[in-house]
Length: 208
Image (cartoon, rainbow, N blue to C red; front, side):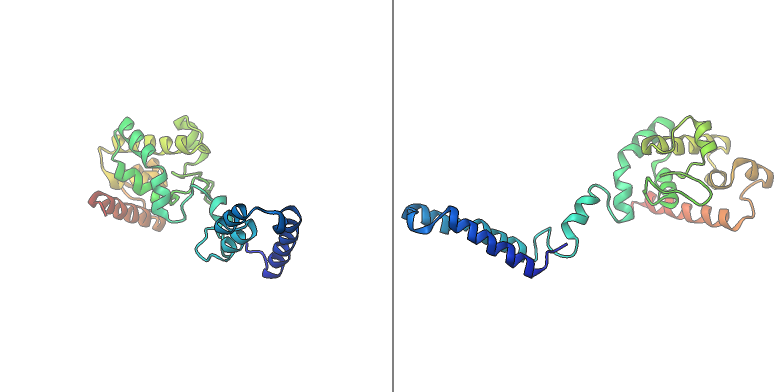
């Protein structure tokens, strides 16, 4: 956060007093004085930096906020891009369409590794603790969470012969419910889930 102007003025004034004591102008050689004037004194440089509206530290919390969240983009697609290499590698390992995995992650967590649902689903791929345990992954480790979700998608896709509608319905509501109803269970949440993830999948498949 920007320091109040009054405080800056007092600090710079004190710095000038100290500078005058350390570097008294009468005894400074002319050549040195010219060099100092050309480069600008320390407090002059500080004034320029503090008054520069384009400086990354200027403004309300600007620089500090940026560095406190370094490496974590605020936009969803930026966050997803952080995990793209893992998605590609793990989808190749488990023979899953990366666009499907990307769509699931986008809908489940928006690329937020700290996502936690009210039902207790964890992380990027929103794995329930029991599901994560069955898949042999630690859901609190982002890469392992991605691996668990992709591995689960592979298992479900194999079970339903590549039917993405049933695969996604089972990912959301459980395969036992999909089996019981022979397709998407008549739950509004699951119906919306399948519709929305398929829309994202088509979007990524088109390269949008």
